[in-house]
Length: 229
Image (cartoon, rainbow, N blue to C red; front, side, top):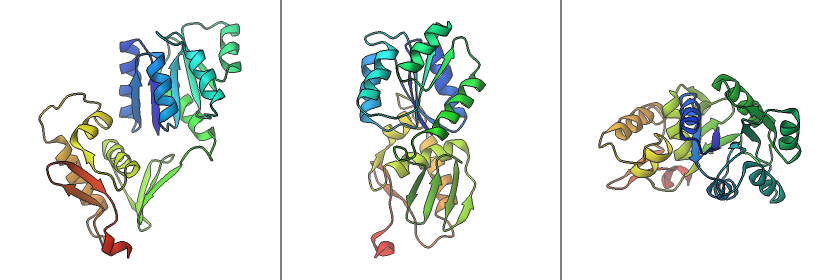
């Protein structure tokens, strides 16, 4: 599941993103309403978590704009405003759920996963496939040629990112930012190690490789021309 977190409080934002990542999901984060709206409009997410009070553009305005633009992505509103009228207002303006701060992460996770399951199936992908490789985004399971493949949460996130960009070269910087949430290069071989492990699981013992190295640039997930012909 890919989630957009729009929250201006750094501690709360990092707490949510870390929890989502540790649960095997992919989370993008932004700290203001204007950038949050742009990302929500331009990219595809399975769910959005938005704080009600934000600099630049408040959360309810973001929700209303998304709905007016035809975006049906499930939205969970976070707010310290917990009166009945506040919750009703948030839901009537287009929110799908409303969670009052402070909150337990386990409840937030359960709510956001429930929203993603109830989401508009026409507007949201539930599976990704490249050749005979398939990733079920809801069940978080992987198969190749019908055979189940067990992956660790980080390996799942890495594979999902590569599959979402199938046929495109994914650079080291992109992987560090989107899979590891690093905005700097820690100068380690963590990417090489995880790609090697992923290759051993999805490519070994199969007829053709899917993960290819683009020397000096990054990696690309694609079906070789000889296999697709």
